[in-house]
Image (cartoon, rainbow, N blue to C red):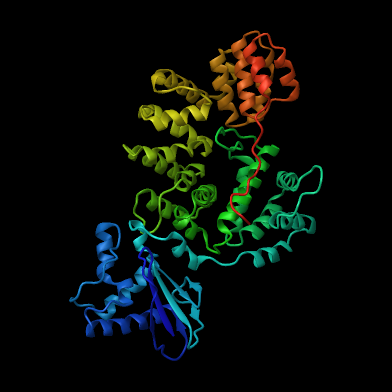
Length: 513
């Protein structure tokens, strides 16, 4: 058979060499053992040769423990390498994910799985440790993990009810829409809105066959507990059972499928490699990984923990890490995100990455992060001030820190005691009513909208303004509301009504199908 080795991150060709394989059944463990035995013998004969052993050497793995990454420089001559130590290192390195093995272009993930080998079979060893610090060609690295997705996906579509399968197939193939409503997107949104757990699982088995249970649970969470607004001006509003939640769930379904469809890999693989994908792909995986750790996937949580601490030899930091931690239901994950934010110190970019995911956090996690920001005076950082203004629809700058702090303290009080928020809507100041509506909408925007409606005819213009601004942000202004506001004696309110409701962004394909 042929053995190929590649250290990703170095612009060098694959190294190829023949290997005589003993007769009889083989597993990856026995094949690696035989390979290392052959290389140790060759090493002892030619101290200066650079062969397969440098992918697996004990010395480099020891240095990795001390430095946090493995050097890609050639092995120094001299030294004693025993066969037993080298075999142990090779098997340990495989178990730790320091290199991947492919036999005839198929990834082998278990040491003791039986292998089917031919005389012309190819064994490929891909070393990953160079990714931590070296410049590398990400596409070159990811290519061995990719597989054509379309034939298998279209075959799985046949397991769905025929009308639903045809809708999905038409979307995938970019067929023209028929004239007039409803659009395919509208029909699919309605399907998700009314879906049962069994229907969501069936859909997940088609789109995410590697992890359908977690994907189905993520869809359920998007329908019930994740915020629904999208886009730059999004707010952390939820509306359990509302169709707007289903629209967000459908967008997530398409985006996450596009990010994962080329890689028939498990959740742990995506946890490791999300930071190597395009930024939009990395971001959309955050909710999926958050659901995984909510469901008890400790291997995923451990990868995220190591990524946050810059301890993983392959994984890279990205928005998927804080989003997964904060969108989960685990308090230890929230605590890790808090420590990550505090550790950012002078790293404004890292702080911004974390804060830009806080509005997508679980409600309890959002409350914890807001409490942390106030306790540790994190508003002194520009990224924190900017994020807080986005969360609550405010428009302040660094000269208004005292005002922003006061507003956040008020909002935190409302989050901790929703009864005081309802009282503020019923009879508080305009600012108090505004912040109260925002915090109530973080639990249930429909309830908050119902409380806001009477304020549209309140005698105080600042309370009417609070209601209008909230309802517009929540995508809850009705045509009747707009008509009444056009006749409002306060020209500011009439101007807002003249602008009309902010349209909800529709799904966009972010790359060709």
